[in-house]
Image (tube, rainbow, N blue to C red; front, top):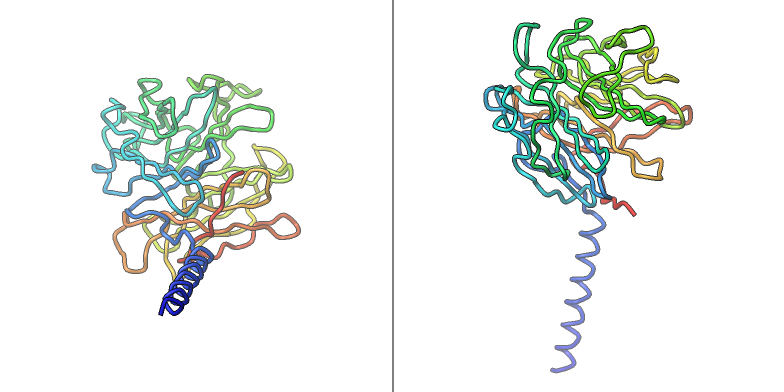
Amino acid sequence: MKKLLVLTLLNLLCYHAFAQSAKTAAKTSGNPVFPGWYADPEGIIFNKTFWIYPTFSAPYNKQVHMDAFSSKDLVTWTKHPNILDTSAIKWAKRAMWAPSIIEKDKKYYLFFGANDIQNDNEKGGIGVAVADRPEGPFKDYLGKPLIDKFYNGAQPIDQFVFKDKDGQYYLFYGGWKHCNVAKLKTDFTGFIPFEDGKMFREITPENYVEGPFMFIRNGKYYFMWSEGGWTGPNYSVAYAVADSPFGPFERVGKILQQDPKVATGAGHHSVIQVPGKDEWYIVYHRRPLTETDGNHRETCIDIMSFDDKGMINPVKITREGVKPVRIK
């Protein structure tokens, strides 16, 4: 009897170990990676931790705060609620969205769009908030927008801050089918003019709509953007490659778009590279097949890869998401 009990316990332990092993081996992030309606996600790494800063996807008059999410492995995410809201940004009244964040001198600078201004006479545009920690709380850095006018036809939204190889910081931004780049001052309080005296240089590629993003791989500048309408099924991401952050950017083609079997409206993305590895992930939003409300967008992660010529392979959007990844 005792022998039988021991064997039974051993069998149970073996089964449990096998089940746990199978579960661990099969474990993925799933898509969406966290619950709730969130869009325009910026993925980034701070202190060996993955972070995602998305738009809280709601009607403009309710889209007045931001949450952040952190993870050690891309699979299990922790929510950091209300890292910024309009009570901290006195000039922002509605529609805070598309955050972009960067760390400099142990401070975290969060760039965001607010108020969805339609002309130069309305108050709003692109602002900057600052915090001592990536989870905030963030406070208004300037007390006013960093950009509050239309330059070269670009609506001041969808900002992305980029650090070049030489340490210079640039701001890429723009809606309404125009994209500008501007050279940031070292303290992020304004801009430095280019050699020709212009403050904002237009770099709009073919079919650009909004959502610019840039990264460097093997010395090449990959410029990416969103195409189509954000409320529609054909929202998507395309890219170009150049030898300079100013282009010229000749469109290569789409690499992220809907899969009618999985989800629609896949767009407004960012990219994460695992440090020291040629391992890349695309963080983006999409709309579930069951949803028709334009604001019902969810944040997802999938693998992004390259071919032998350095071109980006079309991304396969999945329900499974990605396997655990840890930064050593």
